[in-house]
Image 1 (cartoon, rainbow, N blue to C red):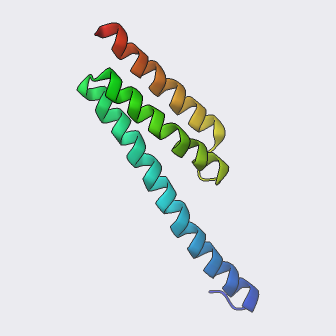
Image 2 (spheres, rainbow, N blue to C red):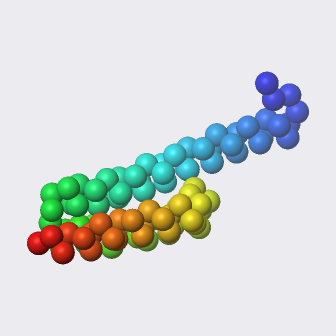
Amino acid sequence: MANTEQSKKRARQSEARYAVNKARRSRIRTFLRKVEEAIASGDQSAAADALKAAQPELARGVTKGVLHKNTVSRKLSRLSSRVKGLAAKA
């Protein structure tokens, strides 16, 4: 339990930051889910559009400290190769 004024304030700040980061993470996951669903449907143009919309959200997650830049880079690389693969199948 926080006893000092400083530790009480840090606890409040931590809760507020946790809520913001949780919302950001949820928003990013929603965009990723939309890309996954578009890939699963087999629609290459919809998947490309969804990926294009997800890219800035993922980049924002990096700048805000929610995700590591290498994690985002890996995710974008894998998703873009899967979207590109849809064109080869069609």
